[in-house]
Length: 241
Image 1 (cartoon, rainbow, N blue to C red):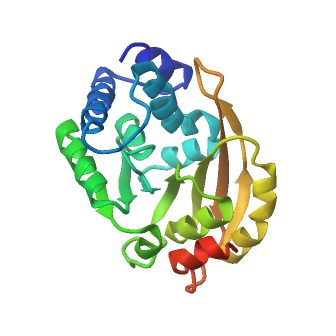
Image 2 (spheres, rainbow, N blue to C red):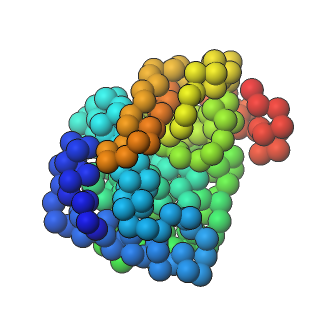
């Protein structure tokens, strides 16, 4: 993809030809599959580069605690509600040492993700078909990850109930948000306390070669999430904590 190397450089992300070739191939696979199933409304190359690739990878530059987790050695990450694989697949491509799990509720998308994993020759990455609230009750997944990331569109109290059960005590939930999130943060304080999380940081980052700002909410898991959570999806959305 044109300007890919430049964007990675601006994000301070070490790159190589293999990683860039994989990102390019991934882009073309998404665009081709998008002709027969709805994966993304963004298909133009430069827009895709900024709004999907740069956005997915911006956590490396914007969130020091993310980089700290990477440097600690073996790191496990789950992308909840991954969709077409964002941010999980770009993160896996650029930081292959991370063990990645992609979670999505639609089998067709999971099938596509498995095609991408096989075609790109990625190792240490798994795609799972499950609803977020159900996966969080699976003993193999609950309290199992150093990093939980999500670009899912949901209010922070709702997203926290879906995602915090996956985080190991001492691990991080990093939610990709947009716009002014001050009011949302204030409204999530009770939910975070109940679920065992503590707000660490909420940086705002300008995506390179654009006027687009990305907000992050960084929550540290300070204690195990009570067994009563997550509730059923209907209750989570109807009566947010």
